[in-house]
Length: 243
Image (cartoon, rainbow, N blue to C red; front, side, top):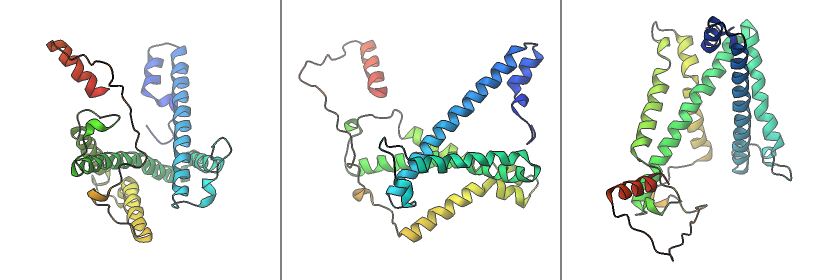
């Protein structure tokens, strides 16, 4: 698929055309359009709310902290949605390379974000162990941890490192920067924030895991039935694991 390809180049649309079904290609395009609109809507929502949080924490301009009476951050929504206009760069040949740079920044940024999420969860579990806090005291206990967190962290890092292999076969400097520009930006912004804000790593014993914690009150006045058979014990453990 070239940079000038559109939705008609989708393998699903091509397969539908080859099958001779006239209506199916239009239906697939409609589904793809719905998916794109849904993704854009969720990204604008999450991006604008993140910007509000950054502004209130002093990490973004103060005007972004203002909201309407209903709590809608109009300035943040408009600012976040404006980045969608960059998609029109792909309409010109000269802007196609710039558009590819933005695609790499946003695409790899997702893997970087999930790497950070998994890393934060592992750090959170270390804090719990350091402070002798049982995971059973949490409102929700994710199953198969910390193994899934290590799995997610490892494979996200693997994808980040190997996704730009085309720059090495053969070696081409421009492709290297296009493939890894998001990683370079992340590292640069991370250490810039450390220097400017003079933040330090929080020690395990000093980590605040109590502020904003949800307290769950359970009714223990009634009798609790203890599983007696093997099947009931298996169902009880599965229910405890996921719920």
